[in-house]
Length: 434
Image (cartoon, rainbow, N blue to C red; front, side):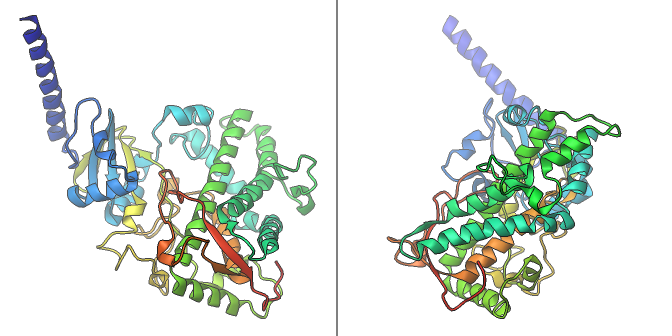
């Protein structure tokens, strides 16, 4: 009898929870979404083995471009089309300008005192303003061109030294480049250069730490900054300056190796443009329209107040994810979206500046990536140089381009799951400087 009573109470509680959730969703006019379970919400839909951005894309094709999930007890809205992303990132930008606060980032980012993961506040606006004014402007990025040239030449020389005799781990080489550039931008010297022999002082100007230590002593700050605030911003720089840039270059090389005809066209463009030059600088790359970026994923946003998007209610405190990966493969926007066709960008008005919502590699609105210029410089120069200097071959065991592994990992930038190994043979017919 007692067992029957316990079973009845458990069943009643279960049904009551489901009923409450259903009534709440009907009352709020929440976006449609897959069925949910008590406690775990929609998490059971994410255990298929695929990466989340792919699962979200597949679910959105069934439930629509504004989709509601509950990841555990966290209300989550997935945005999957250019028109709805424009409502989130432009029309209601202020309502979605904050970040959800996670325990993990709270620990790593010194109570979320960085720029990328901090919630929208006057403190965040102050730190972002300092960052934008002092560091990633086009003028400041250009002032660090000598650093990029040093590190780029070092990596190219290390590839050239192998001389096509064995495979080169391109992930290792590219991460070395991006991390070294970031180290010198942040600290004025390489992390492996404690004596500061290759420091930024040789080029004049301040590094990032110098800038923030100087500003820290200012009496004009609305919110005083501490060493922990500075360390949090430095972590942002290493995450954005190293992982996303290296991931973009590796995916670009992988796609080019997968499509030899595209590789040949890209190399021809680079070599014809600079065949009469001993060296070429970053401004010259503006004349290479064929080189475009491989868009990474975006960081979550948080709805600051109840907001209507596409006729649906987005609850306050809901986590909102704009699935830029899915939008880049939207059948209603792109012809043959699953194919690698760089020609689609030739003579196209679509750019990466956050004005075209079908292509948002740097995001848009108040949370657009503040290091856009820095990221572009870290990608375009090394990629153009790699295409110019070397003839590329597939690694041993990969017989045809179709056999190249293109699997990806979960994460903010959807990095390649396996390191990219290639055979690089120096083009001896070129006399341009490494």
